[in-house]
Image 1 (tube, rainbow over the protein chains, first blue to last red):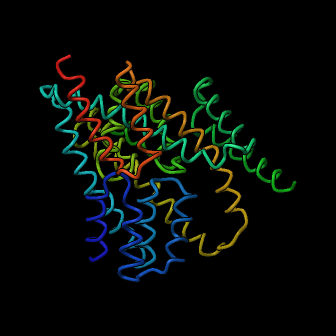
Image 2 (cartoon, chains in turn cyan, yellow):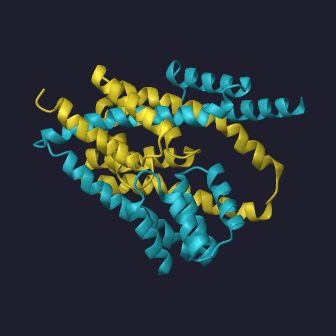
Image 3 (spheres, each protein chain N blue to C red):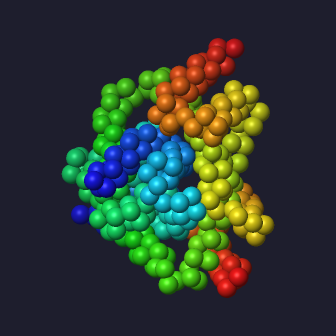
Length: 172
Length: 174
């Protein structure tokens, strides 16, 4: 029950991707239900599996603290409140009489593109001098934009290539 | 039936969604815009922006697509399809993880995924840009937002909201 409340509050208020630091603070710093090491472990699993990372972390914390019941509680608590907030925004913004909101949305969409570019630059920056990583990034870009390769096929091709390339770099 | 189509599209994206939300943007665009014609490219960019405005991960854009296609029930179906398969996957993976805690393959896999996810993130920016940037004003907004991401620690939802206010002044009545 307390798990539900904690995640429901985080889900409804984690505007702009603030969820993960909030969880760390609640479970590690404030309540001490998880050690720093356990939290990092959970974070690592969330990173290598599909799905939104905050949701993965939530269900893994639930699993660690309360088994399969914890999984369901945390899944619902982490996704439903945010979903409801989004629905309210959606209903307002899709009203055809709200011309003013369409103008606002045009600005929002432009900013979202800029933030995605900024985010991509920031995350790519540490790899700017690594030829192997740059080559794979460019190859992925060409495959998807020019040849319209599906995501599944793209993973099937590039995961083995990338693993092989990383091993090669390490062996040197 | 439309609900089954929504379910099929987003459940596949769910289990392919490595590296968080942004890596699936290109494939989601292909599915919902190019293939099924559920929404236009411009709507896709706007839905993505809305999802960044609300709390929760960018993947909630699936719920907006579901809403546009089939109302509130469509949104529910799309959201469940987007989040449940991945959550079950991570739950099962965590069991395996406990057993193979320090397996070296894990590190190599995580490292190998980095350039792939980054490449997809750049592609996502290009695709969203095609739908959202239609003139010098929108490009300026995008550049300012990119700068804000790189140079400041402003909350992302706040940046989007400010851009919305700017949008009202710049585009309304023009």
